[in-house]
Amino acid sequence: MNPLENLVLKASELYQTTAFAELQIGNVVMILIGITFIYLAIAKHYEPLLLVPIGFGVIVGNIPAVSGMALGVYDDGSVLRFLYFGVEKGIYPPLIFLGIGAMTDFSTMLSNPRLVLLGAAAQIGVFLTFLGALVLQFTPQEAGAIGIIGGADGPTAIFLSARLAPKLLGAIAIAAYSYMALVPVIQPPIMKLLTTREERLIRMKPPRHVSRRERIIFPIAAFLICTLLAPGALVLIGMLFFGNLLKECTVAERLANTARTAMIDIVTILLGFCVGCSTSAQHFLTKQSISIFVLGAVSFAIATAGGVLFAKVMNLFTAEKINPLVGAAGVSAVPDSARVVHMIGLKEDPHNHLIMHAMAPNVAGVLGSAIAAGVLWSQLAK
Image 1 (tube, rainbow, N blue to C red):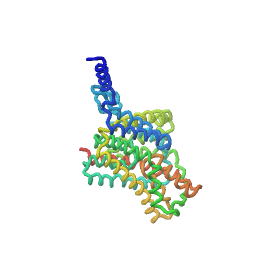
Image 2: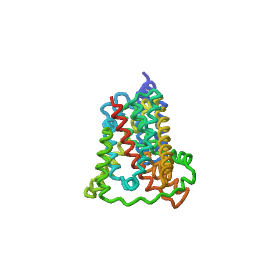
Image 3: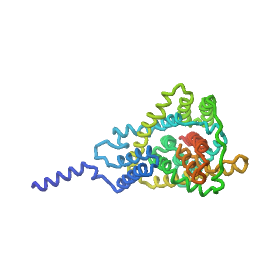
Image 4: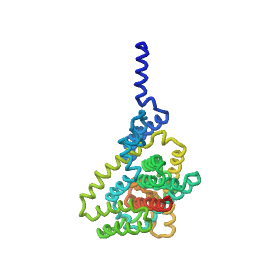
């Protein structure tokens, strides 16, 4: 073998040890999607705390592994596989809920309990999408996991799909978080389409003051009621209300502060990054994934419309009117959905501040999606 042939052989052997040898067009497409997520997070400020970890995770997850090297989340013994364990077994979502509970103020919901109905009404998207998924030949377990995307609650979607449809976990998680991030894009057109300017100008009474005793009793009482009705929601609801009790009791402020800052930030990083890493083209770019994205979009749109329309129905029977925009916050994308409601309201009337009213159905939506997940799990678990 002459020196030139030897050089070519060595170059070929070197090439085979690089990721270029296994790189497919699907991987390139997914890498571009990951870069797009990062762009939307940085340039458009669409849920940067979620899209930056997920976007970079998508890029990492689509670098092909060299034969014999355990690198990806689907390779036994790899570091990423161990990190992904928290997603696969549903460990991260309850920890996210603990942090959310420690950040959440249920006062607005307690001051006007009827707004809870808007959070419940938004869950119609979950169950209608469940039926739609059945029509598209998904199994009942897969349909249940897909339907929960309509709640716009990423941790709940991950928790439920890990139990009912682990093979669809990556697609469902990406769909849920994508629609959470796109709340400012998806919801406003639906809200404007379903309301008149007169309805968007409705002003609501300021929330009443809620005592400290009420705020302490609520997480305990609500936990008992919710979990006795839907035991499947025990883990998510339990962590949510435990975090809220830490916040409201005021004697465990160090714990509450840790839960709503350092801990939730760490878990969000791990969850987002690992979910992104699970979207390798070979596992993600399938007909099922496309169907899940379409169903997720429909589910989220129906959930938004359900909250708005139910507010309009409530106005037919009550003297104290509800601004129907508030109903759009019934999905559990906290606090982005409430913020969108507030911004749309300010565009119509710069002095009509809806943020506090919108937070009531918004936090109710968190409870509603967790309860819906518990019901689906209890009914569909094999």
